[in-house]
Image (cartoon, rainbow, N blue to C red):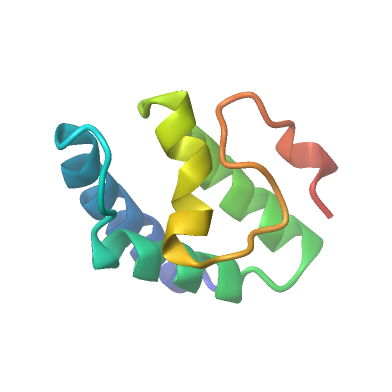
Length: 93
């Protein structure tokens, strides 16, 4: 994953997730789902997946835990780790 690709995907997720958190859940903005999908697609190696996990973990710290856990399924995305602030991203392979 190139630094630029990762940065753009992370910024898209942050921007969209911020507006979603302001609404206390509900429909997730398409930009958030697109950013997570892009980040997940770009993470092809174990270090990339661990970096993506760390990004999403940091975002989950500011979200309601039940909302954070529901984001991947609401976006129709299968990510290989839990979207929560307590995950150990070093164990993601």
